[in-house]
Image (tube, rainbow, N blue to C red; front, side, top):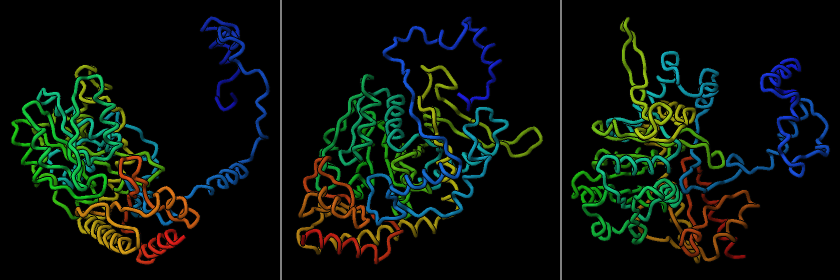
Length: 447
């Protein structure tokens, strides 16, 4: 392996230390039928320019949202990312850093984690946030585990309007540890509040709500909170789209106990579905049961500002049985992107992004609903995403619009909604792009 810098002499010394004469001795127990002896038939070596050119040609086959009119959503969105975000991310002190294992020499990393936590608290209205998590789905699952640790109950009541991918991850987290999941049915695009009231009881550890929900509809968290907090010590968990908080009530205003969500929309690309980052915020009284880790600010012996890992209850740092989380990645670079994005946008900028997204989404929904054979799946209020009934199978529509460089949306049939499609709109859409989509839908229907 010529790309490993060990010399023949060094390799021979290692073999002697191990007690063998050759590399073949190390793999002598592998049966011959599993060992490839024929030539690999690799292509000839490429120069740097040649391999760059080849990779560029292959990459050009991908259809990214930079080249198409995309209306894909379902939890990952095509918001505009200011150029300054990548400029900061690619600085070597950030781009090459992994995690602050040696906190005293990782002050820059700890500082931006601290700033990220502070911004998430500002956004959600909560008192404390951790250093981010793997993604929104795992953050939601961890919130359920946290509520079980806190009140020692084993039942989680979950809105049936939650993102199905979140629910799948939650099931993976709780299977085998005795937590009962109770799914509250949907009613006309929203949670069935009467059924929720019936299902919540003294054995319930938490109620989990997502707003806007999977269909893009805005739930009534105030009503859910009243139902949830009728039970003493029950945890009200809310999963939110951070962009929506530019317009909608902060979770602290409706007395949420734990706030989680997917932070991809904050300055991170769609990345073919990942990497992502989750955020997690709660009340100060619950800090010691929170998963992940927390960066705190202090002063050193000379009175200068300094940062430290205040809490780090991961199994990497303490005994596994006492750890509050087994998640080993806080997606630090993605969290930095979110931090830079939120600082650049500010309160007014985030409100503008949210306002433009929802205004354009409602314009598009109205225009599509005028087309023959199309109608809204329900009449619930929505933010930047909505579901429509289609005259043709959504898969047919999606396939027919691909040659026109349009990503039409998400086929909802696999999620139990017959002949329906989920459409997302962000601030990036111009009137011309929205009208182009409407005209293309009209042409598909007319054959």
